[in-house]
Length: 305
Image 1 (cartoon, rainbow, N blue to C red):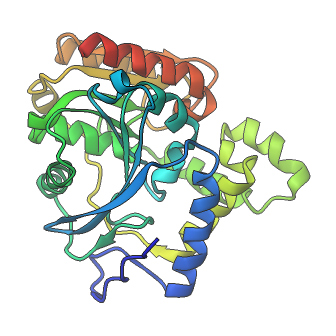
Image 2 (cartoon, rainbow, N blue to C red; image 1 turned 30 degrees about the vertical axis):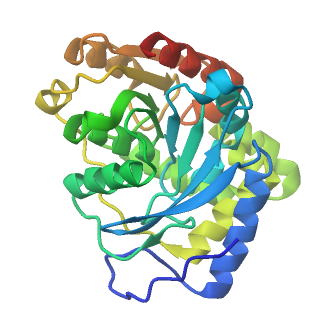
């Protein structure tokens, strides 16, 4: 597969790799994680106003399933679309699936212009969907990708059949406890192998016990200089403008949001929204309880169409 050229822009507001050598090592680590999920049908690059967006396509063999409204996956911060490996196989059995590498985060997309503001993020995603020829999609976002998905439902919902938010940003201000968890989790990736299962259980951090995922995350931190808009929370008046069918899934022990507060708040502000809490998990329900969350997501999408 041809690798897009590394951007020649050097300003601080455009995401970029520290070196081509680190980029290539990171790509190799990503490929090992992709191999854990469904095989890709194709990869494509979509040109947008902000650079080249790399997209992976997965698909069902069943012709009836091929005709269903596709799913588009938007990953979390500091990662790439390889993070969807626990979900691509099941989701793509039921519907076409597209997994996007977000510009400004490590991945195979190449950012050439800054994406500073929420309206720029919505423009980039709308241009990406248009470039893929997708006019009606079920948009699914995790963590930071959940903020991008929520932002899209607020600012540019025209192509959206539904949105699914998996422990997303954008619902409340991110507190210190979340950043401490991120820092401790990253530090724990350097722990001796014998300690990692215990640390993974304590931190609810599966990255520690999946060797391919651990390698990918560690290399991503070294290889890429992240640049993307801050996931500022949407206030009540902005959330209340959303009319797209919405499904919110939160981990019971999430450190990003207060789950009970949000499962009560979101249906009140967005009539018809579905909000649920998954027990025995924190920030990654779609990884910790992949089959359960896959089933819930597909059931919601089936209810929409």
